[in-house]
Length: 317
Length: 259
Ligand SMILES: Nc1ncnc2c1ncn2[C@@H]1O[C@H](COP(=O)(O)OP(=O)(O)OP(=O)(O)O)[C@@H](O)[C@H]1O
Ligand SMILES: Nc1ncnc2c1ncn2[C@@H]1O[C@H](COP(=O)(O)OP(=O)(O)OP(=O)(O)O)[C@@H](O)[C@H]1O
Ligand code: SF4
Ligand SMILES: [Mg+2]
Ligand SMILES: [Mg+2]
Image (tube, rainbow over all chains, first blue to last red; front, top):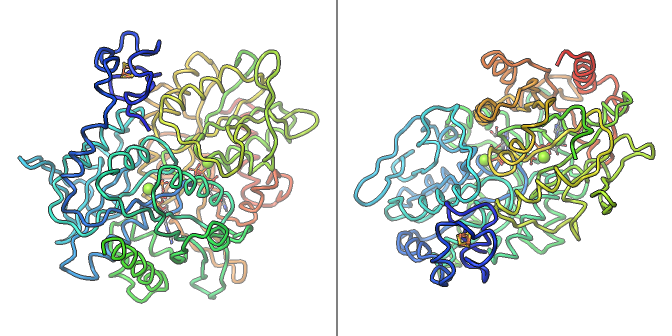
């Protein structure tokens, strides 16, 4: 895991690599002297800054999935609302690390808000008294604006989010990620390496096309040393609102998340059903937990949150 | 190596999980059924789905005298496939690469694969507007017949990301052939009541607002989901399905120059 600065050429070997400053790609790079001297080979100073910045954030959790569209952003927002509603004394922050497709401003109903930069850093946007959010969505002029950035620039943004947002005292920081095992994920893990990352909640759906990518994500977690708090299966079942027939929209032809978890000895946190009203709430930025507090999805969610809280409590004791 | 490719079609979406890989594979299979010679290039490096969907896992690409030889689905070699999945030791292996390494892999895919003569090269992409997309655009700029099909699902969360992808296409100068709306509505097999699980109509109105041709709505159909893993074409296995009709229509338009 090596850092590639924003101004480095395409084939930069990474400033912490043994070849830094010495390979053909380095010719003409503005950092060549520093890299060749070995001065950049130490750990990125940002790691220490981030450790200090996040020292009053008790628990840090990544929401991951190898697969797109399985509900990472939805689950992140549900967990945020649920943790914040559990106890008004608990403060929850959400960091949207999906740079090209930020969903949190819409899902949390705070689109169009502004973030302010004060002496102590960027202040996040407050969704409620004890739930705050930072997303690149707040920095874009229009919803049509595309963030056409290569990896190093995305990494720079994530570094800034982690080191410059003034969250205040937080009990939980939830980090929503895009699908994959690339820049955003590596950077988040690398920058948080000294800040005490509790682990990852991995989201999947039941079908093999999703599980295939999710196994890769679990492999990634193992490779970079991120603990898996548990796997959450989303969109497991659909109950027809008219006749109550239960359908498997995304059929678990290979045993779904439960079989994958038992094969890999990982905890299964639970399953959320498909609920059209949940999709509607995400679009409109409404809090599904308040809209339908006794729905099967909310009941399942509560038990999932209990398990996550228990794991975090165990981590801190 | 794209000299012998008549037409390149990128399948794009800002949003994850909307069905890009499903559309890419069904489009390739439909074109193949119509007798065209087709290539399918999967540039989703962290989450390659094409080998599984087409039931080609465990196959491997070989290095020929002129470059990589794609994996063929059929003996007549009418559908050739290239994916990083064919280069991994195990299906669970993660490709933990940052942008620059992904970029050089995609360049190799574009330059070093021996496609032979192709009527169509379909390119399946990951979500977003980053390294993979920028690289592919930069390298396809010289290809005269190149366009993009955008895939979306009906809900706002997806539309929002697809709008960003439209901006990306316009900025990089790639013509958009049309928008397909996927997963719009599910018909209960018992009572036939149609529930718009992910809302409906969003793709059509996005197409109208952005003045992009609308290519049709594909409903949620678990039978289509189950074709994944078998390498079967909806137009052949489920000829009466709406999915089959949408792909037939898209291919008709591609064939008669309407797109
Ligand atoms: N249990 C559910 N019931 C109904 N709709 C759901 C459910 N979970 C997620 N959705 C909807 O599915 C869509 C995809 O979810 P979401 O955007 O959270 O996925 P994601 O994994 O964050 O996607 P991406 O990979 O693009 O970041 C959204 O429209 C969301 O509202
Ligand atoms: N019309 C449909 N009806 C039922 N299932 C579908 C339909 N379209 C796609 N699916 C299923 O939805 C899942 C997601 O589709 P797919 O993998 O094609 O999306 P994608 O956009 O390529 O995702 P990613 O962003 O991860 O690459 C797959 O399991 C697929 O089989
Ligand atoms: S000089 Fe340093 S920053 Fe520049 S390319 Fe080489 S290793 Fe990368
Ligand atoms: Mg998301
Ligand atoms: Mg895909």
